[in-house]
Length: 402
Image (tube, rainbow, N blue to C red):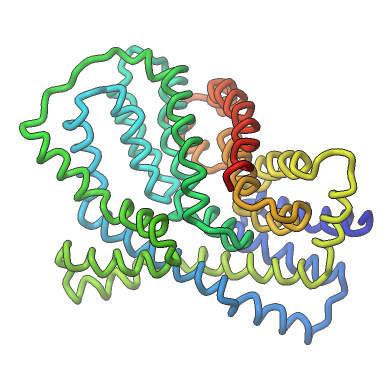
């Protein structure tokens, strides 16, 4: 195991160096793959076979299709202004600045875009007024915008984790719901409850406001519902929703053509392919099994070991890179761990990303609110520590039901 750890450590360092030089995860994964090929002396013929399997496997094709189709749904929502409609309707429906400060950034977080946090900033400022200082406003905007990133299949990190672990998406989403509720409660107790409970003007019609919320969010909510209830593949679930969306939104043929093009994000699709090739390369070396076996023999629990690894690696590399490298190792080291382990590791990665210098959204937030990253981290850490403590108990509870 010792030599494998050194080699994988070198691969990991190469990936980190590329990431820190802002080369993107696609280039970083390519660098890591080439390093692994050299260190394990894999020949040209085997490289061709591994690349072919990595790019054409059913898991890879499903993930690429899912990401593309989800982006297609997102583009329609953007063109029709549906998320903005949902935000405005939520404000009229609940008539509460506290609800606005929590729920609207959460809804904005359904949009897998780093710039989405800028949409949350003015809403939180307006809701908080003088009740929260600038640092606290920055925290609320960032914190609630990122909750969806921990469980929604609109994010590549979630898709990657589920594909690499081979676990059910519906079971994962259901298992994450109590933690989502916990995150809402913790943010409320620490900060949001201090917002002055001013009642906003009543909606002319609550029915119309509710209709606006549903009209704005139904594609995302229906996708999640289909996945959870019918346990269909993500790509098929989203395809069903797109078919309905084209009819409901009366999308013209000419617009469909432009949507097909605009939904293409080549660099992300290439990154997904490279991650899957990297996985094939590591699997072919036998390093994952040998390291997993070594970790299993340690006196320290493999679950604890990989939780620590996920936290530190996410700080340095980001969640997607961490998932790509360590999910296969973790599930090899803890056979039959299933959904509870995935919930634990993904939650730990989520915690780390809320204080990670590599997280681009945090840079956008501190720039928007004109504070330092240290200020934002200081506001975030107390909540994350409590969340982590409660998470350990929840992990034990999940093992009884999953």
